[in-house]
Amino acid sequence: MANTPSNMLPLGTVAPAFWLKDTNSNNHYSFANLKGDKGTLVMFICNHCPFVLHVMDEIIMIANDYRVQGIGIIAISSNDPERYPQDAPDKMTEFAFENKMDFPYLFDNTQEVAKAYDAACTPDFYLFDSQDKLVYRGQLDDSRPGNNIPLSGSDLRTAIDGVLYNRSIPGYQKPSLGCNIKWK
Image (cartoon, rainbow, N blue to C red):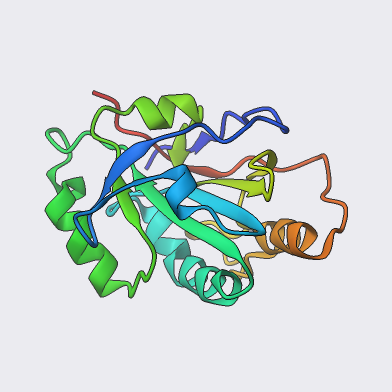
């Protein structure tokens, strides 16, 4: 299990555009199709990473708590499915079903979207405001597999609340930590 931190895309970056296939619906979507009225959370995840598996329940709770408040929720997998067949699109569909993901789980086959977001690990979180500008990138919270810190989603929830309620979002943001994206 590799411990790869986020690259920390500069705050204020405009959300990179994409056009990707959703493994839940088989439709293709752009950022513009999926963004929320008040902000958008883009997450780079995958099916097999122990860090993602550790936080998946909290991700689902965050999605359920904030989608109804105008936050668009998007998950993307950019892993190479040839070297990691457990991350192939058909397995993504199964993973989404098993985890009750009621939001798009997009497949980045070319890995160009991950590169545009400067994504490095899974999970990697990017929160954009209503103007599609990056206001948070970093960890969900301090919990990691095996460190006995309970999941809370506190870092990400604080940032989302900042977007929703026009509160300041701390400039110091801890990088996420997880498995490296499996590049081709």
